Image (cartoon, rainbow, N blue to C red; front, side, top):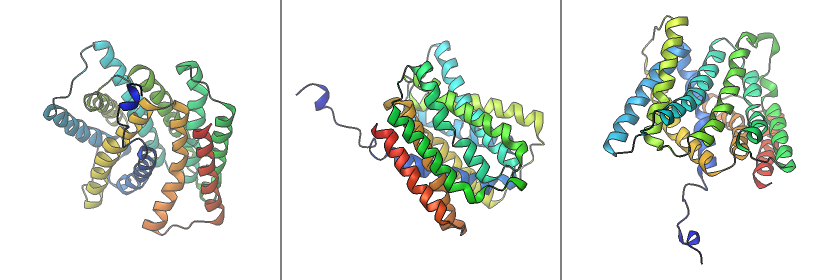
Length: 294
């Protein structure tokens, strides 16, 4: 028996993908709840300030190591700007511009494919033919899931540039994170990343928004949920998966987010689930399974 086989396996590894999808899917619900009470960049600025403060306190109490190299700090900050600032800023701005949920899901559904395309030249990862088949099957499933929600006449297409920017941001951000930031401590690294994203949201809110906030119970609940469950829980799981697995495989789990969001909306808001959407959920599951078993 070799030395590695004696090491205990990570008990979180088996459940991390499913837990990540569940938590990430609730982000759309939280965003929908909080959107009427604050402009998108202002909303994110408040969120990032709270998360930065919480994580800084946690890192201090746990005596977590801080990055000492200015170059490494810069790389961590850039990854955070892409994953948190560009992605979330783009998604929130697209929703605020009136982009329909179905169109938004279709655009963000391009992220696993874009990540797979870029994984080769950036990381040197080889995406096998069966993985490509799984990724394409997953995209087909997403199309079926959101088909009933695509209404071109009221889609708010002015939000499309923000949505495409979000997809590019998280695709480049996750790849950059894996290549340049895999050695960072997840606690102190997250402080640097959210601080970087917060500065970007401050600049955007100062330039484009009034920064007015209506402090309601629903807004506070949405803010607390997004801070703790998404910005701490889901992002930590995502980074753990990026560190442990191939980028294309990790990205394939994002295909499961639209089906999971549809199920949550069905149970919480009474939204309908068509037969086509149910078939699409099965197709997505098959595509993700194929991409991860290839």
